[in-house]
Image 1 (spheres, protein in one colour):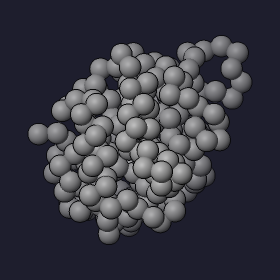
Image 2 (tube, helix red, strand yellow):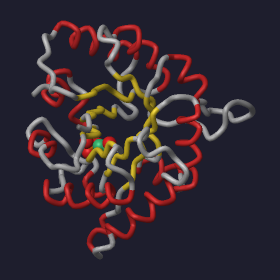
Image 3 (cartoon, helix red, strand yellow):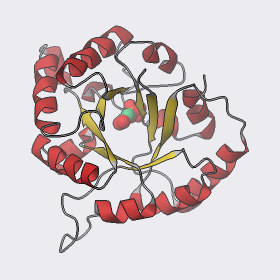
Image 4 (cartoon, protein in one colour):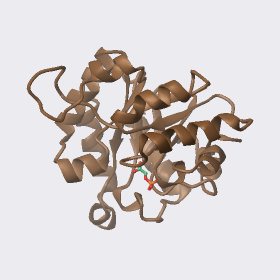
Length: 239
Ligand code: PGA
């Protein structure tokens, strides 16, 4: 049986003090987490050491939100997989729509970054998803198919996570229906493998996650806004 994986994506939020406070509060709670489920948070790189230091459960995933295409050298502002691996990161989000929109990342960049991550034993969480315009013109399946083919080229499909995130559902409060999430995740399943973990992302909340996770091809969630507060994050990972 495939595991489930729930990852909070903090994006560019929280100072080091706020990260420490989050974990101090989180560590005090007695959790009844979902069975067979991995969970954790993707944190801005500068604050990863604080999360690693504060997490009590070593299985709590601390993920990065991006990596450089390069391992080292004259790339001002970039952070390499070697540096993140060294901090203890086990997963990295790659190709989030915000990186594609604001930083011009392409499917080829995503593929290169995912390869680098895997070569260094870090699991890439590869994001794909159609825009509102593409959704409205009924091109979602075609667009996602092209993204998947280009992004996962030559990757070990049993070692990656795919996050299907329709761009129109991210941070908008407009979540896809469970049926739609299932149709799209099933489409991705057919293009990848039975072993690939496929998350849904886009305005997931503690109220919507349970029914979402009942969909046969939805193996978890990538959650932005609802992962920022301890109580809400706990509701996402508890059964
Ligand atoms: P959201 O973000 O849950 O706030 O919509 C999801 C994401 O961007 O991964």
